[in-house]
Amino acid sequence: MAAFTLGGMQATLFGALAEPSRLRIVELLRTGPLSVGEIAEALDIRQPQVSKHLRVLDDSGLVSGAAQARRRIYRLEPEPFEEIARWAGSFERLWEARLDSLGAYLDSITDGRDEN
Image (cartoon, rainbow, N blue to C red; front, side, top):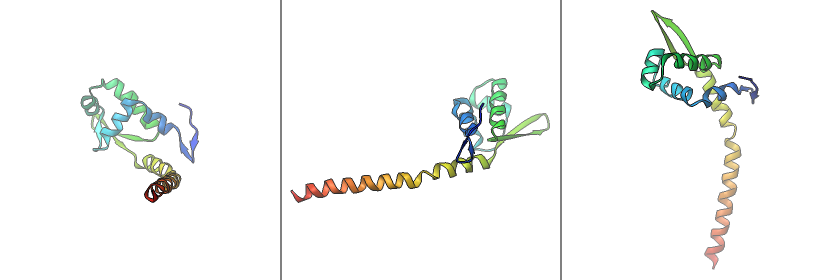
């Protein structure tokens, strides 16, 4: 997966999350660390497929895995999600300005109707 940056953030994060099964895995891991088998069972996906998805998520930095006895336990890494939140938050001023303009426009057309 080719990497380019969006305001300093790796676009591979979005590429990794764009695949529906990987997004489901991330959503599942929000509840806490899980083994490959637990993820496979919860999402009704075969373990080899889960492992491939976890490898992509791990390569992008979204999850990390650690050996625990004979199982590998995966958990979300907070840093990439903090980056995504900062990036998305950078659009807040833009949308606030647009919504303020829309509000002013709606007020102006409503005021014109009130005068009639």
